[in-house]
Image 1: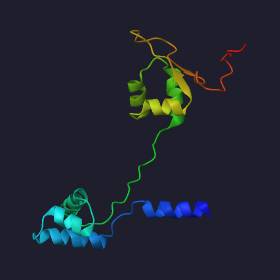
Image 2: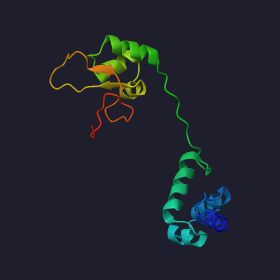
Image 3: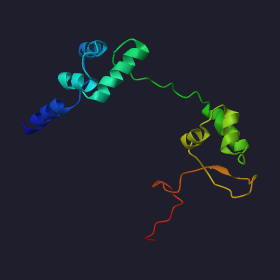
Length: 149
């Protein structure tokens, strides 16, 4: 019973989007130019920044509808091609790998494949830069020695 009451309390205190009807009434009141933005905001119980945001939205789009969240596209990466390229060319930089496999986010692809890499200092063509393996911080790494032994 206590949990249900607390959920009801959360529902009552959570912010909800203002209705489109209220938005239209507020923007129409601003267009009449009889009162200041502060007075209109106080009368309708909204913030001045919200009022100005609605005015800008109406001016830019002609509508006051709620914004619909955008959905991003999934990456189009051929992971097998990327893995073969990295195995054949372990000395390539992230930028070169990205250009070869057709993505700017080569580091994401490398991590997704479980490939680790060593940073090389001042040596451009060091062989063995990329290698397949488990990261050093992984708990499942069999090469990692216990501090107790």
